[in-house]
Amino acid sequence: MAIRVEHELHRRRFSRNLGVGLTLAFFIAVIFGVTIVKLSSGPVANAQGEVINR
Image (cartoon, rainbow, N blue to C red; front, side):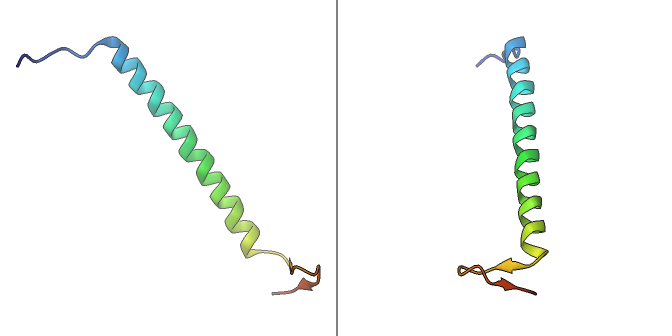
């Protein structure tokens, strides 16, 4: 089995996939952060609309 040289197209595809993956990870981290902040602060309303202070 011969060792083949990696084609330039594969390097470009890998860098593009890496960029998309990092962007997706950043977006997930932002959504997670916003969720944590919203759950941990401020008054919460129950199903009837009554405000429950923590």
